[in-house]
Structure formats: C-alpha cells, structure tokens
Image 1 (cartoon, rainbow, N blue to C red):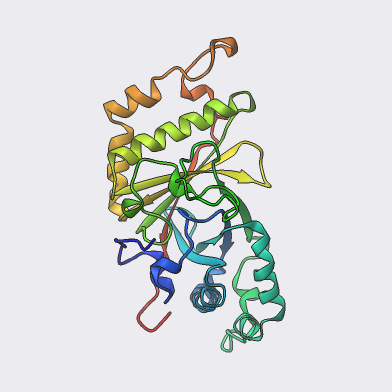
Image 2: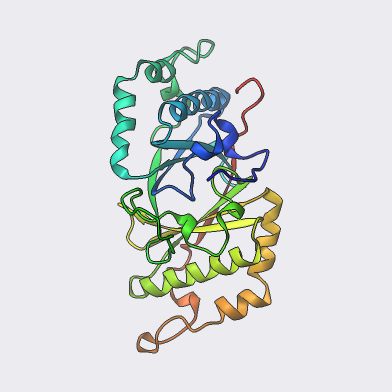
Length: 295
C-alpha cells in the first residue's frame, strides 16, 4: 500500500524508490536497529558515506531490504541510527552476498573518502566498538491480520496490524517526521502483564491521535529476554507535545495507568510493578536529511 501522506522531512526521501516499494516499521517482518558513533572531525564524511551507501543498497535490494538513517537528537552528538527492514531473517544472506561480492557496493564502501585527512574510508569515520545491533520483531499475540494475510510472507505478522488506525492513516519509519524509540525491561514474573500494558498504552495513543501519531510494539529477539520496544512515529517533531498531553490525560490515567495489572496471587498492583526500575528509556530520532545535491 502506498502511503497517502508523508512528512517533507521523512526518511523515505532518502531513496528514489516509490513509497509503495518500501519496507518500513509497519510492514516489515523483522527490523535490525543499528547504531554507530561518528568521529567528530569526520562527521560530514561519515554522513555522506551513509547517504551514498543507503542509496545504492535500497535500489539493489528493492523488495528485500529497505534501510533508513536517522540522527539522534537531545542525546549523543553525532550518533547515527539505521533501521534495516526485511520481511524475514533468512533474507539477510542477500545483504551478506552483496557485501562480499558486489563490486559497486565495495567501491562505495572502500573508496578513499578522506583525501585531505590522511586518506581512508568508513573505518576511520566511526568510533571503534560503537556499532551495535538490536533485532526487533513486531510483538506477536496482539495483531489482527486480514483474512488474505499469508503467514509465510513475513517472519511475524507486521506491526501495521496491531492497532485501530486504518493503514492509510498510519505513520511509520518511512513517512514520519520523527521517531521515538522507547525501550523497557519487563520483570520475568509479569511478562504477559507487561506486554498487555504496553499494548493498552499504545492503543489509547493510536485511538486518540490518528494521522498525527502511530505507535507500534516490538520485542527484542536474539537479545535480552523480555525487553520490549515501542516505535512511536510522529508526523512532525512538534507532535511530541500531543503525546505528552495524552499520556497525562484523564483518559489514559483511568483506562491504562490506574488499572490493576499484577494478579493478586503475585501481590497485586498497577503498571509500575511490571517493569525493572530505570529500564524505561526514550531515544528521539529524526530522519537524516538529504540535501538537493544528494548529500
């Protein structure tokens, strides 16, 4: 489905592919969240490298993988985030084959991009050991797939089937003007209750702010047990104010926060018993803007 709306500062403008051919946080079966830290004195070159590489990868891997780049704001300076969207994890082999054998990919990756700074390529632009990857899969058990959904098409049912918003109103990693990555560790004894709270919270948000905010729920796979993530997509950065107002509103308090969450057999209690203290964290990202000259 082609999105009917897109922020002029959205990530889909990083590629020349039409919106209907893109994989994103709503229709992907698996997402690789990659983080890397640029060296301060090579930040511009690092961003240019990312633009060139993503442009080629998205064309070469159309229908298999779509990658977008985001800047972390109100956080760590010159920290970049990439979301690599795929339908299934086995398709990662296509990316590996390209990295090892594609001459055009290697030309972009290994070309001397630092002729005035001693020479070198991307390996000098990023802080050693700063690259990290997290695997996100849409939280199973909360989706409502249509009758014609083919379960073999994606690793898990895509997140776009989680909530009440019609697909044409949903924001995602391709068309949003800003994205909040919220992460939390659920206590093992409350793993089901914690996920239910997370889903109830985002459902209230999605019901209240259609076309303005869309939240999807994921769990971390091949990583830390019972760590969950929300991707909260904002139409524009300023729409975070609306998220805060809904979060503090009477409806959210009554319908979500005040509900008894922990079973009496485990001592009872509200949502605040379900999570490890200090584990709920937000990272605010905006799409890296590609200039008219492609940089």
